[in-house]
Length: 149
Image (tube, rainbow, N blue to C red):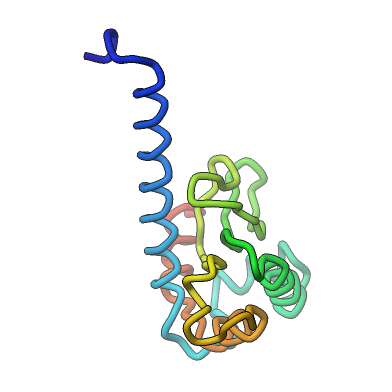
């Protein structure tokens, strides 16, 4: 009974629901982002990145710098489609529940230590470089087509 439930229980349950949902979605995008050969995307996504960041190199420099800046902390570095801005944006998320409002994540780089510590130790920058070398663009291209089209 929502009307009779103590407010602290409602707040706690809804907060945990937001964290669990955000974690699930961002991890799905993260795993979909892996398993490729890196490089550049094709077609529409590449054109959108060049339009919104100036070049693939400019996007890559910003995205990797943001990821490396989160090393030793936790959170996400995201390439998102912002319908409000009508463009792609690199976004920083401190946790699973915070993202650019209304945005759709296309690429997700998990910067929680559990993502890289076993393989890279404290070398978060090496993990970010490895992520970029194994980036798969297919899911991001499909997601952009769904939101932009």
